[in-house]
Amino acid sequence: MTTREIYFKNLVFCGLPMGRIGYTYKDKNGVIQIGKDVYLELRIDEITVEKSVKSMREIEKSDGFMFWNNSPEGELFFKSNWDVIGKSLSRMILNQK
Image 1 (tube, rainbow, N blue to C red):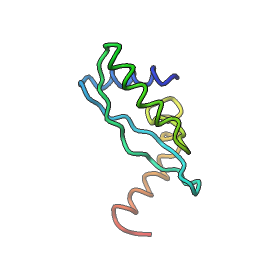
Image 2: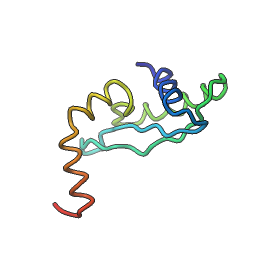
Image 3: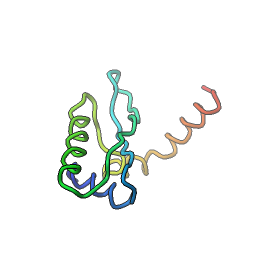
Image 4: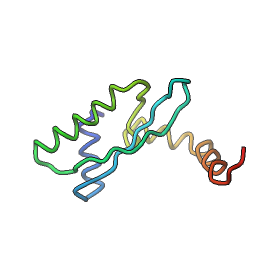
């Protein structure tokens, strides 16, 4: 799925003029991290689309970028790793090791 297709997927499912698009990356130690969400305008005029897609492409160029969370790769990753992610988040929330 191209960056532009992911942008339009967010536009269709969000239905608001602004939206957050999340991504996942590997840090310098090789640990998979959920990145900060990116705030983008979600409109169909070509200027806004190009500006938003350009912002997404800049993030894709960053070291360790893996995928956008709502891309097919991201959806598969979260679906197949949900147990591990859930346990990790629970430990963080409860401040346990």
